[in-house]
Image (cartoon, rainbow, N blue to C red; front, side, top):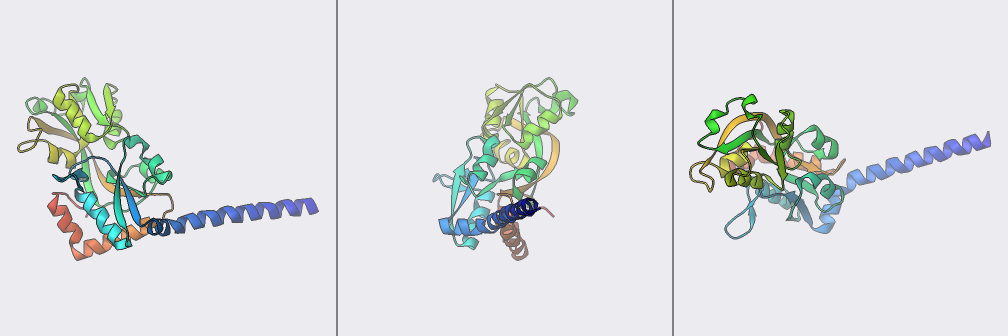
Length: 260
């Protein structure tokens, strides 16, 4: 009987310790960032969300929004380029970054692996092709025999897989996917409509490319560590920015549509 009681008490103590550790982790992320004096934001080169200006500094909707949030926290904002987008959750969990903030589509995978924020921008996955042939492809069935380029681990890759297309190459980021089409090494790519509008068509470096059919509609969110209290802090900050009009002004600057 004594052994049974001792075993029960041991189990209770272990559960209490585990619960306590989880609670501490959930409350410590904001303190961790403030102690470091900086919010490290994981990004890729993705216009108009995160890209470099003529001075080589990071700019874009997400870059400016991240700096605004960092200022609210009283810390600096530092950008960390995620070399392989498919490894974004590892970079977050290992604390190489404090947030994935790069026009990230809210998917089941994202909500499983992060404490994701409320959505803030509306997006869609679109097909980009050479402008002189894009009009020939008006249905998903017509795309089946094409070769594609997609960003590894992206919503674009998911969209191609959902179509049953296996003839595709997964590249480092969405900009590289567009470059594959421009170079003729892929017939098409699937990227976010925000990037497609910024990079292709008249007045851009890829004026010979054009957007085709849309494959899906979606919303962007910011991914923080699981159970991180930064998520609540960011959601409250975003509500304030929506109320005072500063977030709408930023969206207008980059021709983006906020979640209604």
